[in-house]
Image 1 (cartoon, rainbow, N blue to C red):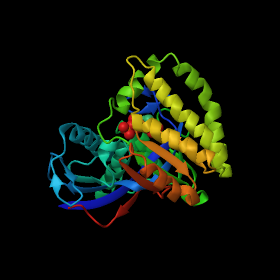
Image 2: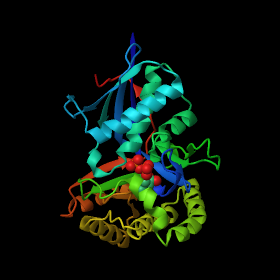
Image 3: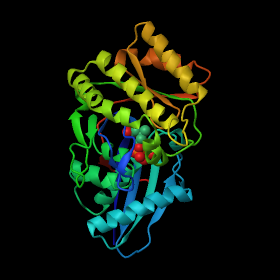
Image 4: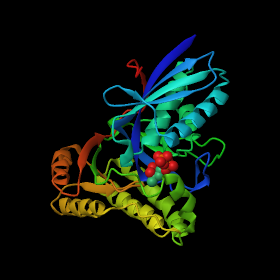
Length: 334
Ligand code: DP6
């Protein structure tokens, strides 16, 4: 006997970054982070529960619908999470899984956040379990991808909500309808990152500036929350740029250092400053990678996308927006 479910979960872009952990395996962060959940960059995951099987199977769905064997590292993290979910739900069978990303997974656009949120929701769906937002967030976080805790919700999200280490989940601080921000993503590099986020978290505290960053974060967090509550991009923008530079300053001054930026990263940052000088409200942020997310309002989006696309350093532009969060859907991958 078997049951099948498919979930979609979006990626998210952090305004205040998760960098450094008290418990890296379970993704218990050193500091709270705030993100915007996206809409068009998402993972779709189909899970079939096979009651009489013992061994899981993981497949990668290509854009044409073909199901392929995934790279070993990719499959390993998924298999570990499937074991974790099997234990948490007291299921005894095994799962057959196929996963698909709407965006290039190699481009560092938080594919593990969307992937693990979609996987967790689809497993629950295949078992006939209904998870609350909080349960989905906590279970997705246990994958070790902390940002997956934020992809469990739509709109604007803070994680963790409080200080309780045993219950480290994300909460929504504003709905997508409250503020329709856009994210123009300039892809300047689609190769693998020089170091995974996991390596970066592990090294963060070796930076002599990490303690300074930690001391600045409470006021930065309050400024971001306040700007979101007032829907004020002129107040949000400078804080999110300051925060992005700070994250990379920590990475570059960690021992040994990690340089995520590429020449294209600087070209886009320069273009964003020029757009601002011309009166466009455009502000840049960068996760652990070289690609730049330009946060803007709907009326500036088309111009910003055109201008970034025209840069020779930019390989592609993805136009995304604040989105609704994960959901179960009927279109299965197999
Ligand atoms: C720089 O450990 O959640 O993006 O599992 O690779 O998605 P992945 O990374 P994770 O760390 C995210 C680091 C960050 C900042 C952030 O998203 O908060």
